[in-house]
Image 1 (cartoon, helix red, strand yellow):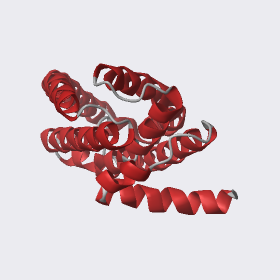
Image 2 (spheres, helix red, strand yellow):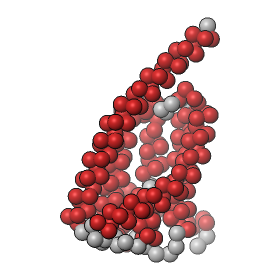
Image 3 (cartoon, one colour):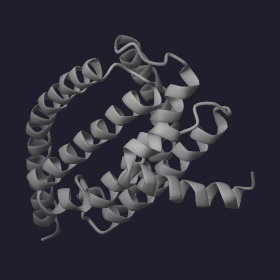
Image 4 (cartoon, rainbow, N blue to C red):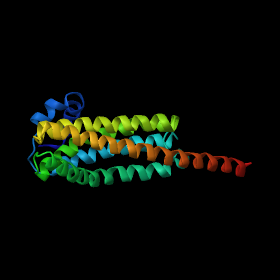
Length: 208
């Protein structure tokens, strides 16, 4: 398969995952090697990194006072972190699938993880909202994470053949944990945002 064909397939498959996840995961290949899901994760990470870098340069992201320097680190980490995150997510999906009596093949779980990572560019695309309003950006980020769980549910049931009732319970538990982390993280981000504002004021005073 040529690189051009693979790139086109990533775009087509991404649309299918987002618009018709049940059908996509019901017919998704679970074999063929790990190269394809790794490349897919790299593409998603690169796109997310470029978008995050753009918002950082335009001071439209959380931590915007650091500008391009902060953005470059985001760009690098988005690509590296995408591959690391792919395998971490695959292990988590494997554990959840095992609990729900689904497919316990690592490659299948890795392919599911790569497909669900389609939310990375979406989250990065909406990242500018945090720069406009921290609470709004955090709520939107929470919504994206919940949508990722929706995709994962269909992946568990349709692709990994997990027990439907068990999958629902597992997703509700994970959703509850995400909400808890969201509330804790929001408080921490507000404190950092306050420090960020104070630093800007000090810099302005220093310039005078």
